[in-house]
Length: 205
Image 1 (cartoon, rainbow, N blue to C red):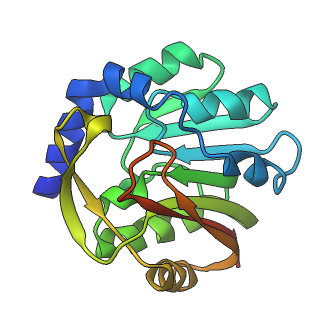
Image 2 (cartoon, rainbow, N blue to C red; image 1 turned 90 degrees about the vertical axis):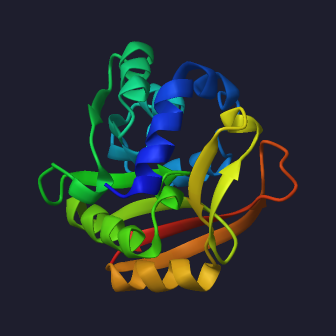
């Protein structure tokens, strides 16, 4: 694992309970737009599930949820909060699921911790575990460079982010076998004026 990934993982392990508390009200409204695209009872893979905040909503709506995260402390919290879901300490760069297993993938604020090479690899892996015409949601931070960032959500601890452009996101989705359905440019729900997001809905081609 790359050094900046290990550093970011260590920060999340250290702050897990406090971080989960800090983000408890930050579920994007677009989660409900995503739900509208899915069949009843769909199976959803959440990439970067943290403490199970969004998984809890999916489960309460009658969906089947598997959540993965590199951070063991997050997985422990998610299992406690969502005993009716399945949670695994797993790397999106080394997914251990059968091909065509899931109807949808929810990847909000997770792939932004990967550099360009690994973001593309992650999307290829995600495509493999999605069923035909499976849906994916991506929530990524807008920008044009990699950066080490400290902010209020991480109590000033430093995390690695890969800020990206709309064009780059669309290119990587196309290269990994997706077609974009719609996208939105969105302000930061945590009130950080310097942070802008791109939310992308796509479908396995």
